[in-house]
Image (cartoon, rainbow, N blue to C red; front, top):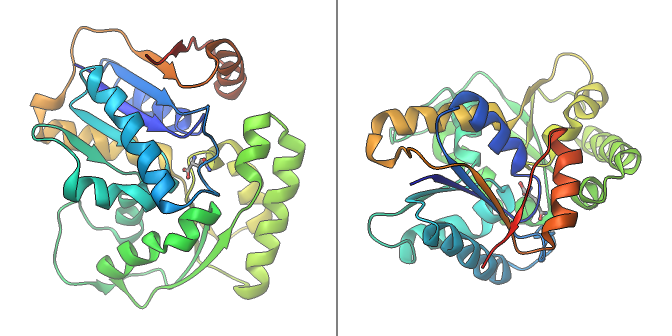
Length: 271
Ligand code: DGN
């Protein structure tokens, strides 16, 4: 049994990499829905349909625990899946709660009433679908009071990264940061709410300037998963090799993924 990681494309590999470093003995199965990427411009219903299909592929591979390593899918589909779709004995978790927990210094399952936190102004950068879902704002309001969130839909950044055009990605990130800072000149913290963005994290940091605490997902998710598996040893996998599946063309996805992570990754076609 392995832990499953789902993403609409390649972005979730940033999370997979951090998980593989933090939990080197845990077998992982990654599914990238490269044939249907990007999700960030799709409707919530569309994202729900595609996400359940992808997660089912990971369940069929024997994964009992699947992480949606995609904020767009977590925002649009996770709650609906948890409420009516996930079968008995299986678990699906998202990626933005660990981030918000780090920001609010709370622990998973802490259902005490919202309380004031040290950070008062937060800049959120994410895909248009994640921003318009307001899922981050809802989760934050559930845990913290008095936090002012200014969200920037970062159109085009995922596509530029998926195409490997880092010059375009860099320029887009700078213009999105500038646009947000015209509305919130000095945020205390910035959330990178898309699993593709760690690949342009340095550009975000530079454009935001000093004094802004940047919260990025991969290490926070890996730490939250290690904590979860420590409490649920039945979900820990043993003895199988990690695998990479895609709905796209395995050869071109393998080449892009290898560029993306700077190590050789071999994808197989998902059945
Ligand atoms: N990496 C995805 C996320 O975290 O939202 C975005 C991918 C996409 O399809 N837009």
